[in-house]
Length: 302
Length: 304
Image 1 (cartoon, chains in turn yellow, purple):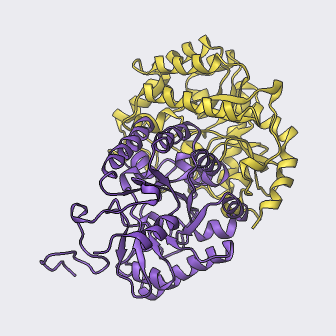
Image 2 (cartoon, helix red, strand yellow):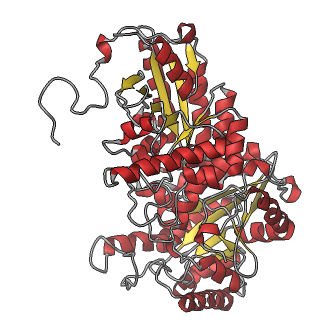
Image 3 (cartoon, one colour):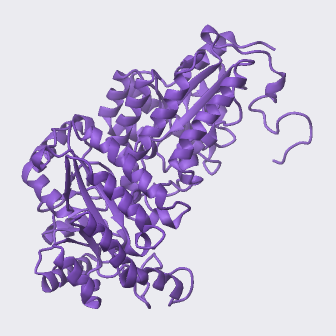
């Protein structure tokens, strides 16, 4: 039975079957805006306190994030539209219910929808298996009701999970999990039933950890370009995935937005970039490489 | 025990010796500087065993509740992807890597052990796992057993007893150097207090410190201090330049500790490549592994 300790089989990237993306692309690029809602008065029901600075509400932190939905999202959208980016949103599903204009804007652009939980203030850590099953039913149903789309993947709410998360995701019919920062290619995740893979997300090329610290937009643009250069070079041998993770309340600040434009201008000027979504990467990988990857990794077992 | 107020160190591990008073150390072919890159291959456990001690094992989004997928998998990136970029970079510059390998890597990643050996890396001991440090909270018998396990695992995986040692997170108790010497270790990289090797007092055989530059450790600079990667590349170059200049008078050793999960990320590797290229372009730089440096030092160090 798979547990945290054997969820992933070892497979060194230099010794894998060649990964070929559609049209011979070197890099599959997906842009993941995290469109979130943090509750004004959350309930702490586990080890993590959503607003640790003050007793609830924490108006400073709450409004800092809500700015993303009122203002930042729309500023971010102008730049994404300029570069014709089709995103895979990492979505707190309750946003579909609270903010219909945001829902419509994402639908109008034919984005793909990855779950990021219901609210960013409700974590999975303390869920029983039955609660977590209900959580997936809620995610799947809410997305279908508002968009007509089938849910395919998840970045855990605020990147939280339980030991059973991959099993329960696969049981619910999801095919990819992006909480794994372990690779530059998709990787099979061992689950009890069905097929689940990781699709590389990023906590390094990610405005949230960066701008919580003493980095700024110019640094974000520089490391994104450096990341792209390296993966683009390596992608000539075997395909790579690159993800840029955004949060509208951060990247949509007036003093930062030009750096999003700068990085996308740079990347999109290259041939051989498959600008895609995590849904499409996951489906392509499972259709073409999953079985081979599982078989190939057996030789590396200790 | 508090320090005795008298000249010299407040411990018995080595003598006091300011670099300004030392006789001249020369490296092979009269090189000014010996360059050693330690590549730390360590595994982080999902849940460290009860009673084990560690400082915060960094990575991911900081320490989150179990199961911390982000932090665990961020560290695992080093074994799956980052290590190969780091080894390629060192090879390009003719630097023989000194790989600090923990028990969990030696036992669970036979491909990596073989790969490192085929590429001519020297493999040194690095404890059991990143999440199990040595510290004074370990009884001395338990520490001796821990060290034995780590040395035996490297011996089993590589066929040889490791000559060098670097503790996970530079962890030691007050007994560690003596216990390591008794386990057959010849040199120790935890002590970050010098720019030349120096002898340590050993109960059995000779043992030396091969001091590493803590400020140039990638985790210390990029994660703990949050220096930008561009500035880190410059730190490496500026540090080298000053030591290279000083090495003309008296040889220096520059030991840099690199972690593949961090420095092996696509956007970082180019800065290591650039900095190492800057170093090895100079005449009089001897790129060597830890044991090569210590062997030379043992035979050629100025006496007295």
